[in-house]
Length: 195
Image 1 (cartoon, rainbow, N blue to C red):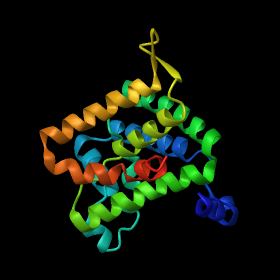
Image 2 (cartoon, helix red, strand yellow):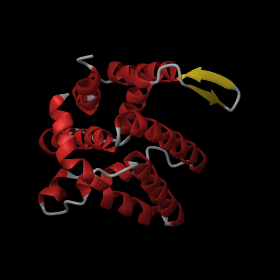
Image 3 (tube, rainbow, N blue to C red):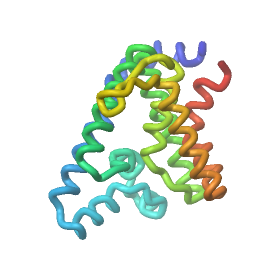
Image 4 (cartoon, one colour):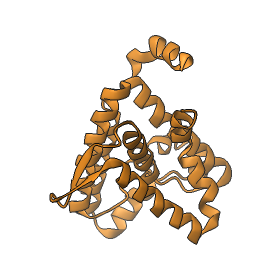
């Protein structure tokens, strides 16, 4: 942790405060743009944002960042709920870690996922970024409660375990996802594995 503290003292002023909230808002913006476009235009727009290794190598470097803005769900209600949930998680992580460490966590995820996509052709779904943020939040605040359907209180540790179980089921169904899933969760394993 001394290395991170040293990096934070040197580069902390460059950290983007509220980065999780920024990503969540950009995802919502992309969703609204997709909703007002024709199906062909929406598909072309999403392909323009997607992390396509061949096109990145041809100079379309914005794809290294914009693939994170593609929403995992194209339902407006679920997107709004997901955006509010991620903004709440982002505020909690910013309070616990500070902006620099949250930035390091997210950019570390983007770096590993980009390398996996460029060199191995692995998918780079932004859903796994949100999942690792959920895991980090649940590790830091395991007894924090959310209200499912505004009625049923559930602790964050159970929400994270359910999410991990769904990902494990995905890997059991198709074992070829094991390495990409491990790579997508490497930032969580590095941040919390030693502890």
